[in-house]
Image (cartoon, rainbow, N blue to C red; front, side):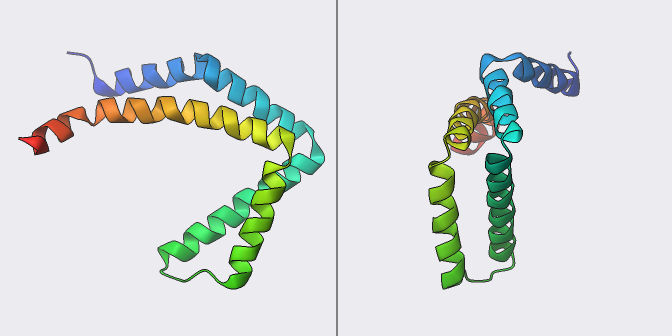
Length: 113
């Protein structure tokens, strides 16, 4: 019987070789190479993290939070390099979600009986 962790590590290596991951890596490199896009993306990530932490603490989002979220989302969507990278991330995430669905099949099967 195969060691499940060996299988998982093999899967991780194969994910890195996928076209979708390579395209995401390339798009991320383009964002990093553009100072304005990189700065905006880092600000967007930091703000998302801040909102997640507030949510985990059970805090409500303020009007200022909502306004900043809208403003950053608009800026990110209007920045071609970031939009392209996010499209590539979404394509890769679909694969990861499919894999998760497959991996969780034994639990779904167990609970459906």
